[in-house]
Image (tube, rainbow, N blue to C red; front, top):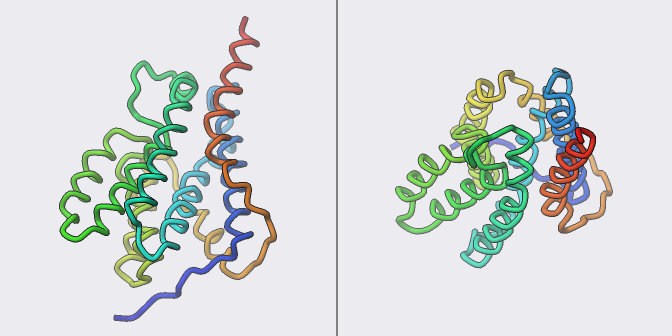
Length: 226
């Protein structure tokens, strides 16, 4: 079977993509919290954040020879912890009256769990069940989880089938987002393979930043409204 190009990105460039995604996410959340999402340009910029986070997450998982139970459970614990910490502010930002849909940390958790069981001998059926049912509970639903999983599949085995799965996931993400701006991340990801950016790794920045910035934004808004 014809192999598509292997995606290989320098470590510093991977970190640069992560910071870019954090910037896009912050712009979107400031727009949501303080302006009720009224600035459409900021909303569109925000649609680029999730695919970049999904790619970086899948890329880091794909680096390992296999997703061992130790790696999976360490990752799952972090996603659960910081996802839970972000939940109150996330619900406030989106004016949710119930906890569903769970935030992006749980989207990544469902993706990681799907990948983990898919990697286990005889675990494919259970992986599909996790994907199908778990995606109903999280932000970006099936397309979001599918994008992350299909990224991982392609990174592990760059074939036409998995490339098509990535593109299909992008297309299905369009109705969820209300536009197709997520596709603007494709040239960013491909471009990252040919540039080298020396950005040092700050190991826990994303984990801490996600619940922290949401909480700060919501608290500032509440103080302003008093």
